[in-house]
Length: 103
Image (cartoon, rainbow, N blue to C red):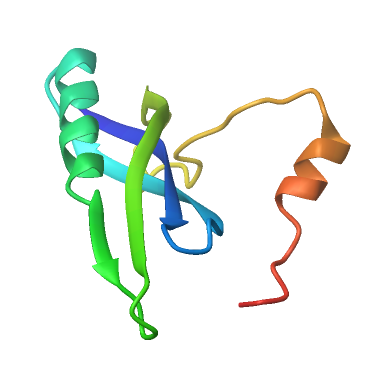
């Protein structure tokens, strides 16, 4: 079975305290939901890291949480929608989805 997952990670500049957040979307194969959850956790934790940036400050990235793991809704060859989620606060979504001027 195919599963779709969303993970949330946080990056922190250990010198300045500046924080960034990254949402990742994963598509993977697993025999069961439990296997899918375990694989998502293992994949996401591989990105936990610390490194020095261009000015010598340490930046640390870590997994904050697994946001969601769900079986893919349809075979992509039949229906292009792989995943759907619902929310109640459209204004909050707009704020969250606002473009970052620094990118």
